[in-house]
Image 1 (tube, rainbow, N blue to C red):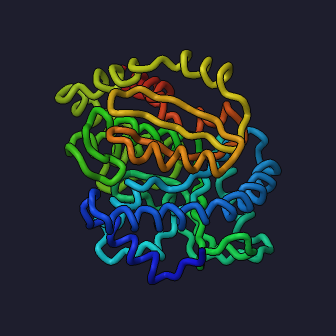
Image 2: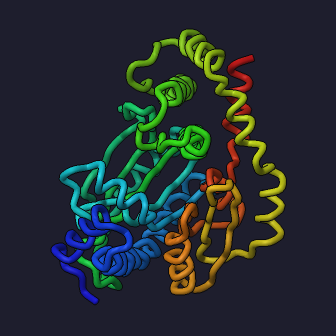
Length: 335
């Protein structure tokens, strides 16, 4: 089926604002799911392109790609008044993680200078100019050209970040469980938002890059404010409790022994903080399981592809409540 921008935008509006039990919502969900799946071919093509470039920089890079969650699509449409679904640029997303800040910019430069039929639509350096939340990373939006999809103007977002930037971003998502708010969207208790913004600046100093807005300028001052927040709100105890919900060693054993290397993985975590990972060799079966999981109340699911089962853990630790590395840094910072 060929989707026009008008069809996509109409479905997006119904998805975001119609009652989930209405016939209009069900029709919209069917259209959006079909359109979202059209990004799969473009993601596969970019996977090969990106991994080839990344291997030349650092063989220990981490790669993952994903199709944006329905709940995330709805939330973005509701938050951004003028957003049209056909113009949403991160339905299909790829993520590259490197150890060094220099490798991030080498990868970015390689993508900017490569000869490609795909069209660069936007580039945003959130490392030199961090978001107000403290988020840091480099984003590029490419319009896919090359056939294999019936959707118009399919766009793919590429995120390139360091390991330090990555554990900050995934820990924000994990902490949303205990904060009971989408911290990633800068919503929730102010002390949580302040805490993560300050930690972002602490990390930025280590990478010798600009700090997040509205934070002290020195590591000493930042540390003092983080300690004050911890004393008042028990941040560390809350993070330790979260991390204890599932032990890192148990998850690693599960990934190593239970999962075979497959092209697609469905990651789920439910409202009881129970997680699971399922591998699929076939996209159609994986996508059907993904759409079914998204309909379950209290289930948070995402369909991803990585370059190994080990990088699955590294790319999406928040789906296994694994904030072990982040927690270790905070413990050392506070004591």
